Length: 129
Image 1 (cartoon, one colour):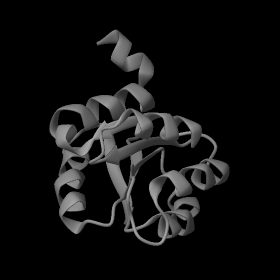
Image 2: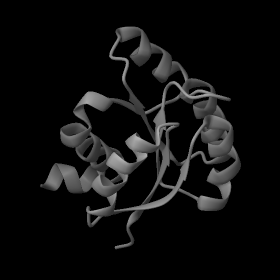
Image 3: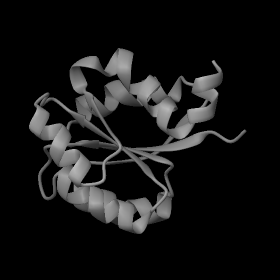
Image 4: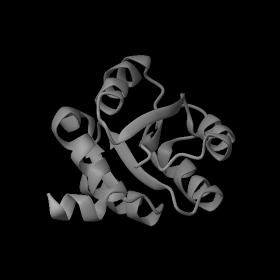
């Protein structure tokens, strides 16, 4: 089985350095690229063809809520996880309106990000395990 391709989008290089190893060390995922804002993600995503985009909420140039609908328009089968420091109900509502599939708080990255990614990209394998 081919690994799912993950595109990481965050303006913090420290966050990218922390999240990339979570996916790189997992046998079902490989990071196919990184971007530092939504506009760059929109420019790169069609070429990278990710299966999953981990998208920060607050970024310069274009934030995650603005970028998500455009990314879904370009890649209708892509899964998007909003990865954010903001844990408010409003963030969940706005992310649903933008077409985002899941929200994972950055504070829970080590325990929630990979399981959430698996449940989106590999729903049948999660149910079987």
